[in-house]
Picture (cartoon, rainbow, N blue to C red):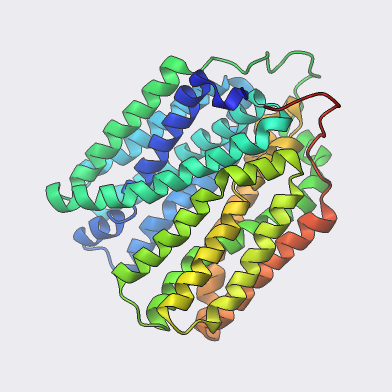
Length: 400
């Protein structure tokens, strides 16, 4: 049995991660309304929503540096506790200023959690199983994002918006306990054994400069089309096709369901054939889907395009994390993955900005073309500029 499917690994890693992801989903329908209750104008509500990803981006590199000094499990626990406290304390917020501060702190600690989890996977899972393990990791986020908003909306309607922050804290406590009780203190092997002296951050950056310039650029464009797609589709559905919010939600759920269904096949492709065989079709097909979006004129057409986009995105589930894990030098894995995720977060933050800027300057369909260009660029860079990172199995070796 692959190590990532063992009982201990599932209980100590995947179950807490799904709970963590569901907690994040709880806040999606609640935070904008909570900020509005505190008399925040629309622009400030936007800042509230942006501060969590901004905090994550600011925490990526410090998280990698912390992993130099502390065990991976410790950093995961610190990240979990920080997110728990920063979100739970929203219950007591009576003005918008503490909300802004707490959302930034939540994002910063989320970076500690995310980079440490990514590092733990890279430490624990051998290369020939890594694609499936990380694809399932990405699938856990998708499941949480699917379940969380409905649960958060229901609790907020029944018990009030602040009750969602209490539920968030209780669920995060369960996630934290799962890690504390069941996750081993170190990687499967001593992560410092047989490695050269730990290099400085700047040395690692110099040594990995070419990787960050090429593969990092590919990841930036890859995350840009992913974020741009999720921003553009609801805007197009509402402003061009005139659909209501319930219909838009149903269409997005259809695409998400297809996305989730592709998680394990994506991992199989990465581990059996190669990382590029998942990456290039994923972003190339997403780009085609974005070009088809402005051609849709009906609900059925939009739903079909979104299912196609869900299939395409699911085909690349976990690909960026897997390639980052493959490329990371063992002696500076945490620092490398912190910088790697920082680059990806820039792209993820830039996608909505790209859509909004081009839509304001030109028209909304023009933004779809720009987002498609980002997808084609990502596919081109990974197809031609980045070597295959899967180490082929020796004859007679099996990954099952």
